[in-house]
Image (cartoon, rainbow, N blue to C red):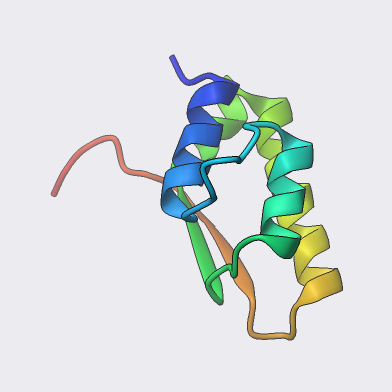
Length: 89
């Protein structure tokens, strides 16, 4: 089962958020707008799984990344929301 805490741990690890990251959305916003430099492209795999299992958290993540894109970046920042195949090829 995927939990909000799991999502924050993944974000911390994948985006190299600092050890002081508070594992909540206010801390995420603070981190991406002042503590770390985000890559030009973020790819989130398994988006439908996030929406199904923790829909409010997924929507908040998408909203914050969109707000970040609108306020702090140029046109080269993108977020790709990809499905993750349940089977391996």
